[in-house]
Amino acid sequence: MGACDADAWRGDLGYFCTDYSHARGCTVGRRAVGRCSRMVYSADLPRQFQYFADARVGGQRSEDYCPVWEAFSNYGCGEGGEEGADMARLKAAQRGEARCEGCRCAATTLCNSSHSDCGAGREFGCYEHRCLSPTRLQMRVGNTWFDCAEQPTPSRISLPGYAGELECPPAAELCASAAELGWPDLRSVEPASGPAGGGTVVT
Image 1 (cartoon, rainbow, N blue to C red):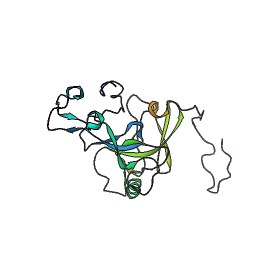
Image 2: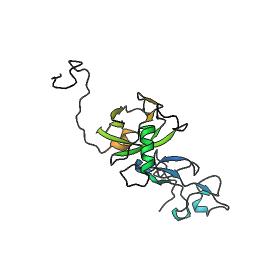
Image 3: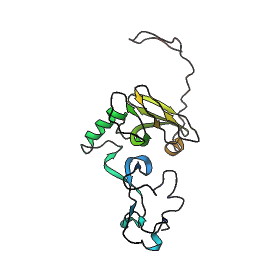
Image 4: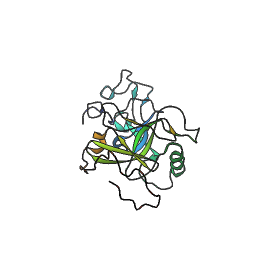
């Protein structure tokens, strides 16, 4: 019932957005890629709905002029139908993206070295995630899981075969309620190699 620019709205990944309508970002919960609904009206907004220095700037009228991240209809991170299927296949080939129940939106500049048409600059895409503990997050690109180190600034993953990086979401955001799985950190494996057919006992 209060103003939509209060602290809860303006969190690191809150509802409130300030970018122009063509900018992309992650929706709340990181379940889709979307755009900011911010726009400029032809007249000043009612005083109680003025959130910017320019009194004409706000979101959709039906949302009390609060500019929020709105999901694109064809860019949800969950498994969907044919809507957006062609784009999902293209993004998988270009940037290693995926669509799945455990997939979440993240910032990326990844571009498969076999593609030259990824576009320039920071984008947003969908990648599978899993939580090993409340503070340990992993992201999957292609068929490989990568650790996201918990750092004050977002950690970034570089991958063989890709230019650019994947920006990990904060583990505290996606894994706060995760159980501690107790997975060990592997320091070494002996022997270091074996036959491709398997069957080698390792320590």
